[in-house]
Image 1 (tube, helix red, strand yellow):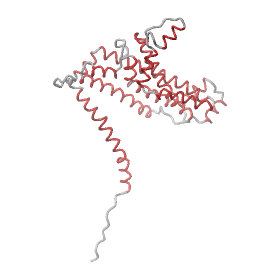
Image 2 (cartoon, one colour):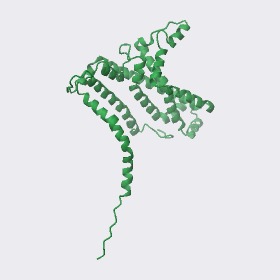
Image 3 (tube, rainbow, N blue to C red):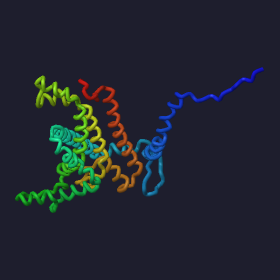
Image 4 (spheres, one colour):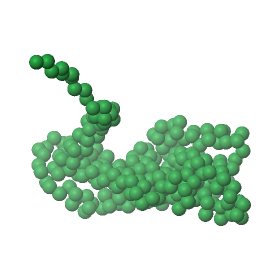
Amino acid sequence: MKAIETTPRRAHPGRRHALAPVLLVLPALAYLLFFWGYPTLYALVLSFTDASLTGAGTRFVGLGNYRFLFGDPVFLASLRNTGVLLAGSVALEVNAGLAVALYLFRAPRRWRGFLVAVLLLPWLFSPLVSSLTWRWIFHEPFGLLNGLLNAAGLPGMPWLARPWSAMGALLLASLWQGAGISALVILAALRTIPSNLLDASLTDGAAGWKRFRYVILPQIRGVLLLDGLLVSIKSLGAFTLVFALTGGGPGYATEILASYVYRLTFFHYRIGAASAAGIFLALLFLGLVSLVFLQRRSGTFLRPGEVP
C-alpha cells in the first residue's frame, strides 16, 4: 500500500486578512478600555451610592443622586449656563470662522500664509494661560479693557461681577480660542469645491450673495455642521476657561456642568452625586457625537461637487 502523503494545512489567506485589522486595533482598544472604559464603569457604580471624600461608609442609594441633581437649583443653573455657552459659542465661532474663511479664500496668496499663522496663534498658548490673560483684560479696576475706557474718558465697569457681562467674557474668550480653527476647517472645505462649478455659477449670473447661498453654502453645509459639533464638544468641556476666568461666578451665573462636577467633588466631597453629574455630562457628549453619524446617514454630508 502506498503511504498517504499528508501536507500541513495552511490557514486560509482570507482569514489572515480578516484578523489583521483586529490585531492592529487591539492596542488602542486595550488603552480605551483601561483609561476610559474602567473609569466610566466605576463612576457609573459610584453614581448609585453615597460615596464621599470624608471617608464615611458607602451605601447604595439607587437613583437618589439623580433625584438630587434635578432638585438642585445649582445643577439646573449649570445646565442652563452650559446651554447658553454652547449655543453662543457655536453661533459666534462658526459664523466668524465662515466669514474669515471666505475672506482667506479670496485673499491674495502672498498674504494667506501670514493670516493663517495669525489664526493659529491662540493655539500656541495653553487654555489656562489664555484664560488668565482674559481675566487680566476684564479685571476691575486695573484691567486692560477698563484702562482703555478710562483713557477715553468713560467709566470702567466690573465685567466679571455681573452675570451678563461675565457670560459675555466667556463667549469672547471662547471665540478668540476657537474661531481660527473653525476658519481653517471651513477654508479646507472651500478649497474642495470644484473650480468649474464656481466658474459655471458666474457664467449663469450667480454672483455675490446668490453665489454664496445657492452654490457655496450647499457644498460646505456638512462641514459647517461638523464644525458646530466640534465647537459644542469643546464648550461642554470648557472647565479650564470657566474655572480660571470666572470661577463659575458671580454666584452661579457662569457655572457649567464641568465646573459643577468639580465643585461637588472638592468643595462638598459628594463623590456619588458628582459621579451622577459626570455620567449626565458624558451622555451629553455621546449625544453630540452620535449626531455626526445621524447626519451622515441622512445625507447631510455631501461630497465635493455633489449637488443636493
